[in-house]
Amino acid sequence: MWKYWDERRAGKIGATEWGEIEDGIARSFGTCMTMGTASTMAFAAEAMGMTLPGAAAIPAPDSSHARMASASGRCIVDMVWQDRKPSDIVTLAALENAVRTVMACGGSTNAIVHFLALAGRFGLPVDLARLDAISRETPLILNLRPSGKYLMEDLYYAGGSRAVLNRLGPLLALDALTVNGNSLGDNVAGAEVLSDDIVKPLDQPMLAEGGLAVLSGNLAPQGAVIKHNSASAHLLTHTGPALVFEDYNDMSARIDAPDLDVTADSVLVLRQAGPLGGPGMPEWGMLPMPKKLLQQGVRDMVRLSDARMSGTSYGTCVLHITPESQLGGPLALVKTGDLIKLDVPARRLDLLVSEAELAARRADWTPREIIYPRGYGMLYAQHVTQADKGCDFDFLERTAGKVPEPEIH
Image 1 (cartoon, rainbow, N blue to C red):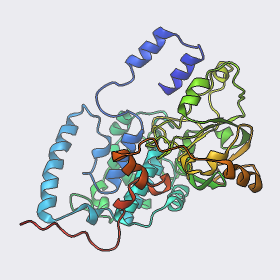
Image 2 (cartoon, one colour):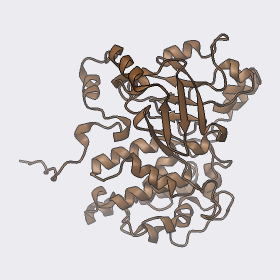
Image 3 (tube, helix red, strand yellow):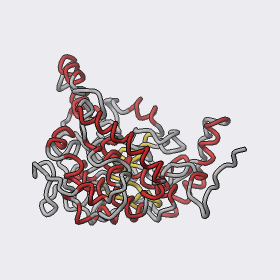
Image 4 (cartoon, one colour):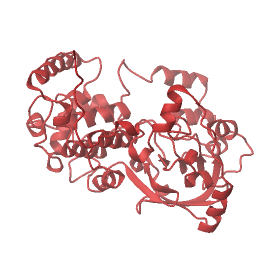
């Protein structure tokens, strides 16, 4: 749909074709049929040991789904009797199993936020640097949309999630405990991959590295994320002039203007889309392509924001830029025309402006007011963390000592 919406805006297809595409967006109930955020997190949960084996890839209408639900109900009762808790399962090894699996599957950038929040809540030493290190040493082996050509249903018939995890076995901590009391290795033992074109062998991957990369640099001092397996290869190293949109409304009002001063080399920049600025870090990160460029045949360009994007999205989109613009991060200081350099192989994102000029801009910068002065909105604004910490409430992070059970009288 993302792809053909661009064709619709470019005038390449009409209303009738667009209606037919809309009618075919989903073949059944259930989640997206690609390696979108839902499928990504299902795989992460299974690799972490928090679901029964095989749960991650069952098509929603398949009868195996109902059987998995019944088995899950029995399992949770057993867990209560055996006093097997999430804190027994979500260890450092388990969380890193989940991270490695998502990298190998070309999963959603949204997983990064969840992993960091989990690390905070369980008190585990996992940060952006560790996530990137795991990605660098994990091959991308899943040939699924949006970065490949197959769908989740195809993966199910090719062996499903157990087969994927079994193939990844040499890279995983297979002794990690899972919800049913077995190790991860026991749960996936014997599972076979029935199509090497869908689940690539470890020595014949889609990419030598995992699908997600973490960037740093003077434009993202605390990190940024890109799904480089879904980006355009020729843009992974790129320098171009910024075209800044102050917020989503500004972008929406100008993006299709025929006189927009933009070329294929431009770098689109969206501000006010982070945890505080959005608020809520909305999925605005796949900025639409300018209509005038679509009409010229351009289908991708470098786009930057402090937002998230859907797991079904693709393109050269740098996301989760931290600190966000609302807090006065460097993204807030970018001006239209500034040169921005993206170098994914070197994991860099830099604003090519002198430190003296940035200091002068910072002195003139004033933040926007937080729009919710009371209630939950105020609580959220006071306690939400930045993307590099998982966009979670700071008071939910694990601290030393155990939380006591409440007294009941």
